Picture 1 (cartoon, rainbow, N blue to C red):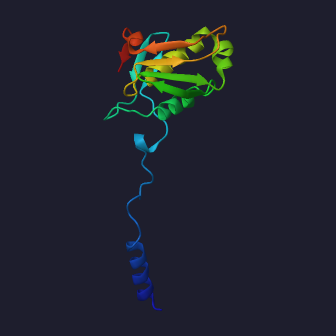
Picture 2 (picture 1 turned 90 degrees about the vertical axis):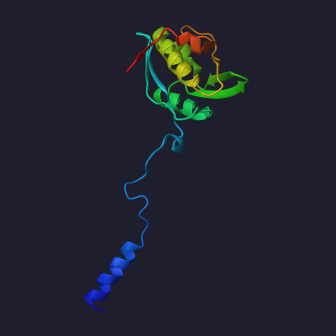
Picture 3 (picture 1 turned 90 degrees about the horizontal axis):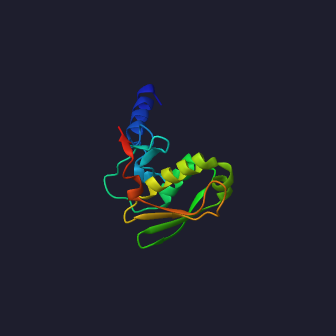
Length: 152
């Protein structure tokens, strides 16, 4: 083959390839299994919006996954939903009850509850843990955060 034929064949091959994903994979919130809405600071009782969805979210597991990504120690697990209440427990409850300290368990519950309460139809979030030195089973409502300031 002469050089011109090789050049034309190369142009033909390159011209036929898929051009839809040249810049790599673009992540959208619904393409991932992790979702969070708020960052929270229990000490200053402030919260910062980190994601505002276009529509309300009704999926529970992506929010649980997001919480577990930030706080991997207790490993939150979804137990059940009854009407407007989520029930959750932990694979490692000892971390919350005995190892995290009062401030650590308090910060965790604020952060987790604040994010889980963003799920469509959820009005109460209940965490089931055995009673320990630093934590016990507890339930949270949106009203529990009404005095918190929003950071920009």
